[in-house]
Amino acid sequence: MKMREQEKLEIENAELQTTVKKQVGKIEHLQKNLLSTRLIDHLPAELETACSQCLHLDAKNRVLQQELLSMKGWQRKCEKLEKENKKLQQEIRAASQENLQQVQEEHIASIRSQMELRFKDLESELSKMKTFRDSNKAELEKYKQLYLEELKVKKALEKRLDKTNERLAETSTKLEVEKQQNKSLLSTLTTRPLLERPGVGNFNNTLIFNSNLCPRANLEFSTSVPLTSNSSMMTYLLKTRRKLEKSITRELEEGAAEFESEFSRLSSLLSTGGSNLYRD
Image (cartoon, rainbow, N blue to C red; front, side, top):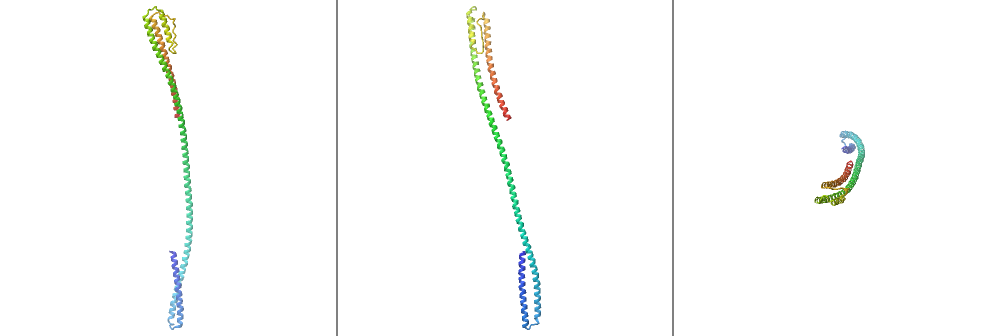
């Protein structure tokens, strides 16, 4: 707007100057005509009118020149303000760029810090997973050893149980054979006369031979023991039977004790392994 007003004033000033020049030309022309014509009476009035117009135009010209100078001053101020505005805008851009760069650097630093923390967390989790894997591996190895130990103990128990069953079956068979022999001998003795001594000696020898069939019994019967009656024979047979039963009972108790011992040892191993596992 100010630039347009300034241009308008300059145009008006130029027009006034042109008008002044025209009026001056008219005055000069009138002065020349005044000398050459007879209309001398009208010339002073025209001259006065032209002079007043010139004065008026001159005054208006001075006003316009002052306005023009004022507008030029405003123009210089506007140019100065524009330069300052451009300078401020450049400073603002530089400051904004600097702030933006600072914000970007802070954002990058924050992201880097977060990535480092995440990396440390991942390393910690990886270490925990490795520790857990090693613990599981050790635990698996421990269970494997316990299983192998249990398998060995189980095989040993099975062998001992088989041996005990074999001894028990053997002893039971021998006891049954002994019972049958004793029954046959008892029936033979009841049918023979009491004074038949050789048969009694043979019976004693037979009992001594049969008593050697039972392991760990250590049954020894002397042939020198006189058997004079059926009651003494029955007593002898009862004693022999009791000794055989005691031998069988002792065999069973020893086998059961061995089995209980191995079972207790296996149970203690398993309980120790379980308690160690819970502690881990």
